[in-house]
Length: 292
Length: 277
Image 1: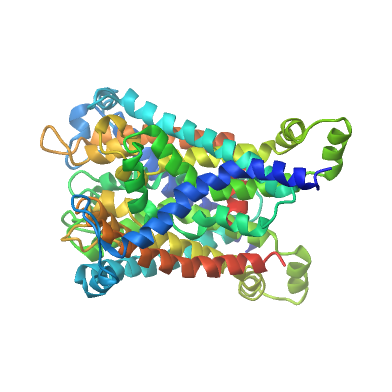
Image 2: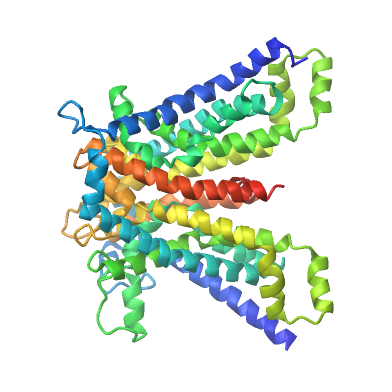
């Protein structure tokens, strides 16, 4: 019935709107971005072709390297916390008792709120004079004068921001880990118990190896997420001090919009897109294999 | 020994819950502090008084809260409609029709999975500026749809593929067209997947920040996160209005948490199918 040329035509008609949409709003901008990156363009003046000059400029731009280094530092700082923390939470809550189920639900709540909004919440909590973090640390006697958490020192800022983002997204990894742990066949665990394996060995020798692919997947997803970080830095430090906490996406935003260096912004975007592509391809490869 | 371990795990669970809920609770509490207390340094933990002053100030802030709420909600609704209108038929086509170069087309449709939208904003802004889609809720909704489309298409295609062929064949025997089969067989059977895609489109749009920051420059078109981010630096009395900011945070969080508790089942299944493609 649906296999003649008419079926093909009808099928294509159902597909066409989505295809046109993607061509117009994803594929076309992608092509335009590649074209723009080869031009000098500031919105006011017409674009002039400059070849690879924008890319050469990026690699010689010290601020570009500052943003790359800072983004990598942030990624290296936050990813292990998210993976190890998320996995420990999953081990804690994987069994289906009421309390564990509730804990899982609660840990997942911050995942559903916006990163922008959670950053505004933590912007207040970490405020030097009006925030509860300093108030609590002072009351506990951990510090003796308010700490300037945000926008004064790049290192201190990234610790504070990482803490807020860990709170926000740790439940994401946890839920995926719980699913993976629950999928470990009970016979495997029982066999290990018969062999007299201790609780810790059961985790390190049985559960962890069997859930390794999920661990890798979540690691990749959080690396990609961290490399694309923007909202939390824009809101909590505004790139301060002196653009030291401006991440890669932040630097693209600065060049493209406030500075209107569109060609340069496009070249930076291309570099970012290629970097992310590498990680995405690994991720797709991993997930494809998991279905075979 | 065993029992002690169980109590310990229970205690850790309670501690984890406390740590996770504390920031949210503190934000809600800060939003109902009276004006003077909300601006106090050092801050109080538990409000000494109770008032809706912060909400009052937010209600009247610049264009007024109703405008920003309407912008956020309007964009989200448009994004849901666009996402479903585009991906329900497309998912159906990919699941059930013999289309030449189907695999290639599918990869093109999933392009936005491979290219992060953060990298595409510069050319998109130029295009939107040219065709009058900046400072427009429709424009922002189009951007949010572009972000959400691959996930939605993926979930719907899989869900349509899983529907038994017998159901569809019965409909065709009765002489219904492919459109009627979609309307009366596929859409009702795939309702959980459709709810999931609508839910995720809503959450993405309601929470999205960078795209709105780039596309919206007129404050009357700002979404809720955008006006709140603006308010943290724009101040009338020389300091950030912390009470109003937390009132805004509380209001922004409510729909997300509500949707999560009402549709938890869809949330988790959607997350699984989204992450493990």
